[in-house]
Image (cartoon, rainbow, N blue to C red):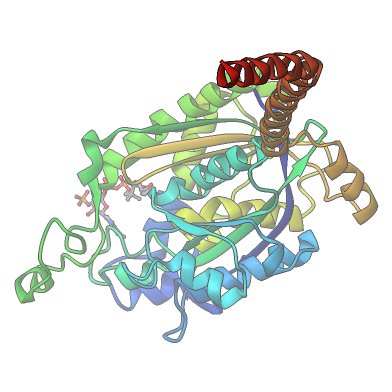
Length: 400
Ligand code: UT7
């Protein structure tokens, strides 16, 4: 049972300055603008500078999200970073981000490919719903260009770098995350793989020569999966929310390919005006794609107070993740204070129950001891009398 709602109270995005157009790509790999636009809808993508990393992109988006939420880094109770392109395998990038932002809360990294942000939202929602934490930063970030083989036209034209972030905060009124649908099917996992970085194989010159440190993909298989799972997960999350397609004001799908989105919404029967697309500007930014689209839809005034959004993602694993989010603007400070006071806090309830039962046990023991004491004082004269008797007896016995 959900005792608290979690609403998006802050949001932010960051994309690197460098734009790589399809025409630029024509100069480095055997491709052309016409093919890329027709098959994917992508016109350009952003590529991180050499001095940027996953953590630097993430922090820029996160700082904006905190500012919108009116919070400081040390107000955060948890940071969840969704990415498949961290600064290093170790240390975990979420801790780097937490430290560099000046936050003192726990932080962890969630790796589910392109579905990472929605998996992160669903995870953050649990902590808020149960009253464990109040303010949680969820970041979707990817610096995937470092893992692309710029001679492989099957992959390098598709992806781009970027970051998006939201702050989730509690609410006593029904808003925010209403339902989600998470899924995983590893059977076809190897159809989208970065084979050479991980414990399954040792990195050596041979693996580097074979380009195993680059992302490899069977595009057709992923395409089939995507166009099947996108409508299916949309319907499932609606069912979980007790809603229908008509209740959705804006569908924000994972921005991998405009054709995947087009085919899926035709299968669903959703009009294109109700679907947000920005894949033409950024390509596939994996875990950053949904938060980037969400923030841009907000910036373009496409989301109004009370709107129901459906976020749908699919990707490596293979995985899928969808969420229904009702939009609600951040509350003012005064309202937020009232909001907080109205919130059922499970943790404090548990603490209060534990405290009360301890108090009852202490009281019961006290009453028992007091009764015993009173009884003993009532019996005292008898005891004294008895004592006297025995004293007499012993005296008598002595005299005897
Ligand atoms: O976030 C999730 C991760 N990934 C995805 O969502 C990707 C899902 N898949 C797709 O979006 C599409 O399958 C692609 C965009 C990757 C490919 O589109 P397609 O319509 O499935 O093309 P295809 O792989 O069937 O290739 C068709 C032709 C091939 O040539 P032949 O064999 O017909 O002569 C390819 O070699 O297009 C060729 N081709 C290209 N030509 C120019 C493949 N890539 C390119 C390219 N430029 N970049």
